[in-house]
Image (spheres, rainbow, N blue to C red):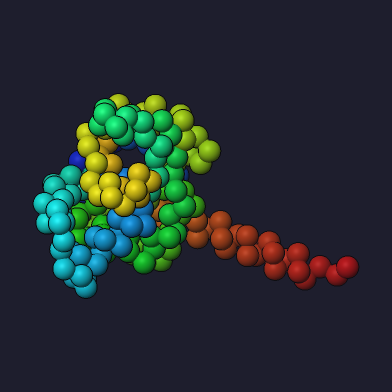
Length: 208
């Protein structure tokens, strides 16, 4: 298992290939549908003007995400009243929902890794080649175990989006993932999809 600590260099990203097991340590930021839509509309395509603390959050995110990782995760968090936050569950969210946004977010913020489950599409794969970056597949159904790798919750942005959709700034130690999309155009998800399609076609051709 390769040990990777954020921020990650381009060289370290280029060294990763589909199938590599990785233990991630360091800072990362969670972000799902609301966060990605907000980043795209407010700062990348600029179809809505910044409001409230948007500009302040943007400046912080530019520093936090540079060379770092976005985790598609809607955590269960304790300590909301006291702000002594602790992750209770931290499982991955299905990533394909962020396909319209992810490549642009990666390029704009220099995000080197995206964590989620289920893989992403051609646009994100191209973004991985150009940024460069990788897609990390996290273990589905292991939310409590993954939460134990979160050593500290440093803060949260956009809590008004709701706890699952907010952008949580977390520090992790040896968070286990597998590279399933790399910066060389490799995608395990494409391989599986093509093999499944071929198997289905074979079944449909069989006489009954």
